Every structure is written in structure tokens, then in C-alpha cells.
Length: 341
Image 1 (cartoon, helix red, strand yellow):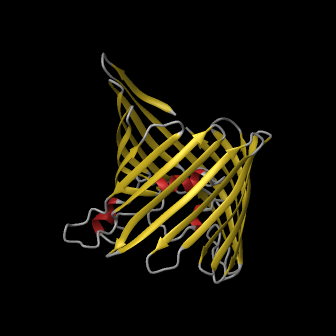
Image 2 (cartoon, rainbow, N blue to C red):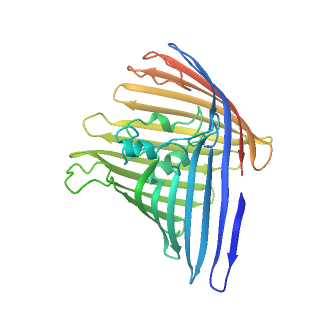
Image 3 (cartoon, helix red, strand yellow):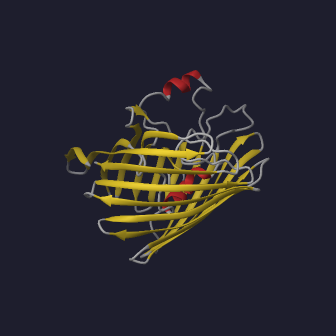
């Protein structure tokens, strides 16, 4: 990270920081229908570039901003993110043109902070996503992550047009509430894209727990509701993870998922492993993932990940861009390097 500028005065201090991640991986996916080999980005951490700043307003108050853009460093283009509660590219020519190129679509927020907590406005992560990624040994990225399996979660990773409140810690307990708008006309009865979410977390030494839920309108009297519970415990020799997720989609069967995993320090790096599952009725997929991250420095890592998926009940989940037949297996691996600044 690099501080671009700093200004001091009698009543205020401000700073702006440039930060980012460049992550590239040689990746392969194998399925019964087709295989795929590629150089992809974000196999360990999401490639990005961003700016964040803070100003001390005095009296315990601070103003801050965060602008973060996704980067496809394998081809140099800007990376897209979930559209969630805004119009998808192609649905509106104006929106489509605006979403092309490098945009601050990962996060674009402005905040006011104090002893009362933080009020945050803009495009931000959703509370329930934070539970899904925090309690997966593979986080959000690469062939080993479990998060992509939870289909139907329209409030997925981020929400545009959001207003959030993040509380200070009360003996380890924190609360995060969020409301977001689809910005529909008053004559639009469906109010698609309107929603709300919350997260309650508890952190005390080696123990971390969280409960989160969200609800998003997708049409007239139609909602998607997602809830999850997760936790981790650091034993020192290993860190254990567990989570369970449920998405209720109006007019369809519930989507349920779960994960057990662990990380352990080995040599100059960390071993990561998980077993996860997702099911919608009889349609089920089970995944096993194993990986190792070798730290060259505080900012640079080499990593390798292997994953295998077994499908049944008509499921056809495939890894790393491959295609597999219903009820068949798929495997994939990533070999990559990540550098942060």
C-alpha cells in the first residue's frame, strides 16, 4: 500500500491510499463433456485496484471513502461483478455502456464514523456474503471455493444503492444492518431490487461466530431470502471452519448448503482443505478441495489448489470452465501467484 498524499491542519488530518492485488493462475477444469485450460485471474485473492481515504473531522468523527475496481489482469480489462439489484448489462443501453471498462464496481462507498459506529452509503458487500467468505478456508476465490455453488442467491456478493450501519463492538458482538434500493419508479409495483440484510457477529479470541440473513424483491410479490450461520475456531496448530446456508426462492425448492474445513500452518505456508455440499431437492453436488499457499513475503504468495465435485440427482456442477454430464464428476486445479500492494 502507498499513501499518495497527506494534509495536516489545526483541526483535521486526511490521507489517500492506493492499494491493490494482482493474482494470476494457470488453471484447468476436467469434465465428461469438455475440458478447459486457461490463464485466469483471482485464483487466491481477487485482482483489484483501489483508493481509500479518511479525514479526521475532530470530536471523534471521521469521514472516509472507498473506491475499488475489479481487474482482469490476464487480458487487461475491467472485471465485472454481480449486478444484484441493478439492471443487468444488455437490458438497458445506457446501463450497458456505463458498465463497460474499468469501474469501481467492487466497492464505492462514502462513510461517516464515530463512537456510534459507521454509516456507509453506496455499492457495498452484503452482510450475508461476509459470513459465506469468512468461514470458507478458500474464501471467495479459486477452484476450491464453495460460494459459487449457492445458486439463486440474488443478493449474492454486493448490493448497489445501499445504506448500511455497522456498530462498534460490544464485548465482541457487532451488528451490521443494510437496506438497498432497486431505484424503481413509484408506479412500479414489483419494486424489484429493493431489499434488506443484517449480520450479527461475535469474536472472542480464537472463537468467531456469525448469523446473517437477506431478503430481495425479484418481482411482484416474489422474493429471494438467504440466511446463513458460520463459525471458526483457531486451535493454534489448525483453524477449523463450518457454515450452513439456505436460500428460499419463491416458486422453487429451497437451496441448502454446508461446509466443513480447516487451515493449518505448514513450513512457510498454509494447508487449506474443505468438504462442502449444495442441494436443491434431490439435485445435489459434493465438493472436496485441498490446497497449499506458500508465502514468499508478506505481500507475495504462490498457491496450488485441487478440487473434485461429485454430482447426483441430475446436478452437473463443473469446475474451472469445464462441462460435465448430469450425475458425473468434475475436477480442477489452480497454480498461481498473488502480489498485493
